Image 1 (tube, rainbow, N blue to C red):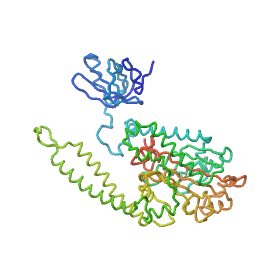
Image 2 (image 1 turned 30 degrees about the horizontal axis):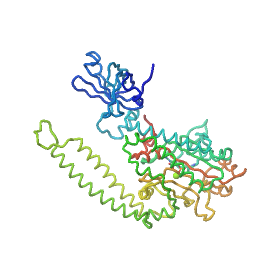
Image 3 (image 1 turned 120 degrees about the horizontal axis):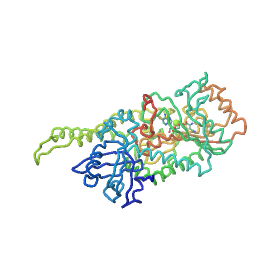
Image 4 (image 1 turned 90 degrees about the vertical axis):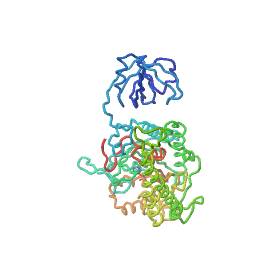
Length: 507
Ligand code: 4AD
Ligand code: MG
C-alpha cells in the first residue's frame, strides 16, 4: 500500500490520499468535524463534512477523540492559512485505535505530571520539535568528525576504574566483583588515539548526582574526541570549529522546529563570532566583578536585574488582582468588561517565572561576591559569567587541584593544569570539559595517589605513557547540555526522550 506522509502533501495537491496518524486536536461545529492529524512528519487539518461523508461515517468521525489513531482518506486541497499549507477534505475514515480520556489535556499541567506521562508527553508538538533538533545535532556531530577523518570507537560501559572522581560512581556487580558504569570513555579513547590518531566516542555515560539541578542527569550521552599530537590550543581550535559546525547545521535545517519551540535564534547566530578564551584567573576576576565585559559588570548588572524583576513582580501582581476582580462570567452584558481566565493564567505563569528569578539572582550574587580564588566554578558562577557573553566562552588553565587527575600540568606554571571548559551563553554554563593529557608517568602516578585511586586499575593506562607516549588532547561534550542550550530549555530533563535522574526512573 502506498504511504502518504503529511510532509509530502504538496506533491499530491488535488489528488486523493490516505493519511495514517493520530488526532492531536478535534472540534465540531454544525455538520462538520475538524481533526488535526499528526503522523510524525507534520500536522494537517482534516475536514469531515456530513454532506460529503453521510450519516454513518459522520457519526464515526464524531467518536474520534484526542490521540485516537485514525486513517483518513480525502482530497488534498491547498490552504495557506493551515499549518503545513494544506487541508484534507475527507471522504472516508476509520478509527484504528481508540483513546478514551487522554490524560494530557490542553490546559497547563505541572512538570511533574508531564514527566510521569513522558511516554505521552513526547507526542506534543514541542517535544516533537526538541527530539528532531536532538536528532539533527547527533547527525551533524557524526558528520563533523567523520568528514575530518576521525574514527568512531565504542568504549566499554562496565569499567574497573573511575575517570571523573569517585563521588558519583554507579556501582554494579560484575560476576561478584564491583564494576562501575562508565563516567567517561576518555581513558579508552586515549588508548585508541594511539592506534588511529583521531577518534571519538559517542555513548551513554552514568553519574550518580544525588541532587536535583537543572543541568544534571544520571544517564546522559557524551561525545568524546581524542587526538594524538594535539595540545590544548589545537584542542580549543577544534572545539570551536566543532560547536560552530553543529550549531550552524541546526540553524540551517531546523528552522521550523526552532520556530515551534519559540527559540529566538539571534544568540545562536553569533556562533560565527570567535569564542573568547579566558584563563581561569580572568574568569574569576569577571565573576567577582573586578573586571568588566564590554562595559558590563557582573555584580552591578545582577543588582539592576533584581531591581527590575522586583518592580515587574509588583506590576504583575496588581494586574492579576485587578483582572481577577473583573473576571468574565456567563451572561455578561454587552459593554461590560470581563477578563478571561486564560489571560490571568498567562500572567500567573509570568509571575512564577519572575519569582523564580527573584529567588535565583540573590544566590548568584552571593556566589559571585564570595567566590574564593582556587575553587572550581559552580553552577551559579557559570551562570554569572555566561550571562555577560553572547557566544560560548572557553575557560582554560585551571588550578590543578580542582580538575581531573589526567590533565597535563602547565609547563609554564605548575599551579595550573591544561584543562578547558566551554561555557554556553544565556546562563547555560558548562557544555564541554576537556584538555591536554598528562604524558609524564611520574606526575600521573602522583596524581592517581593524590586522588586515592586504586593504582592496579590504572596500570594499563600508565602503559600508554610507557610505550611511545605523545602529546594528546581531547574533550567531552554533554549532548543533553547542548540540546538544552540550543532549544533554550528551562531544564535538561526535556532534552532526552526518557530522562534518568535523581528521583526519576519511570517511565
Ligand atoms: O567535564 P566532564 O566531567 O569531562 C569528562 O568526563 C572528560 N573525561 C571529557 C573528556 O575530556 N573526554 O564531562 C564532560 C561533559 C560536561 O561538560 C557536561 O556537558 C556533560 O559532560 N556532563 C553532564 N551532562 C548531564 N548530566 C550530568 N550529570 C553531566 N556531567 C557531565
Ligand atoms: Mg567538567
